Image 1: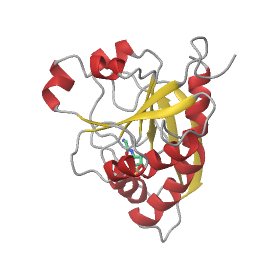
Image 2: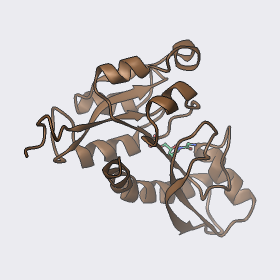
Image 3: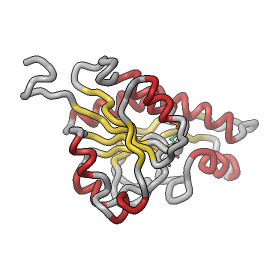
Length: 203
Ligand code: GAR
């Protein structure tokens, strides 16, 4: 059966991002898009952001991926944009530097179909306010010798769902938040798309 047929449709990912979007770029490069197909059965179909000025929107434009800018009230008090996501046949949600908590409406509509990447070894250094360089600053302040990444399912608590994957890297005595962030980004870029692919294959 050919991909794209009724029996084996393309799985469409929505990537949620609030920032520069380097992980979103890697996901797009790995899976492709409708305009630039790559993977036989998975595509990045939508970039969702809560920030009109986020760098990730330039990446979306580069690859002609449709975008959705979301607002607080409908996200947290409305349907969580479930209708808008279903309207464009989104099957799976990948958070890539997305800083808002995911509302219950969205979790219920996409059970075991939302994953996040966190730039530390959860359960350490997770929770509200723990993102980006705040995580790396805390890791360095605590004189950790090891950090890493965690890829996990999303539930109604910050950085809490079941883990899919972890990888570690050293924290060097001379590290700054920026040098550690670069090392962590390399790990993320190496692993995230493949782990997303594995998670989608389980759905
Ligand atoms: C990534 O390091 C990701 O792990 C982190 O934000 C960065 C986004 O970078 N996410 C969190 O801290 C979530 N708590 P990017 O915009 O270049 O992909």
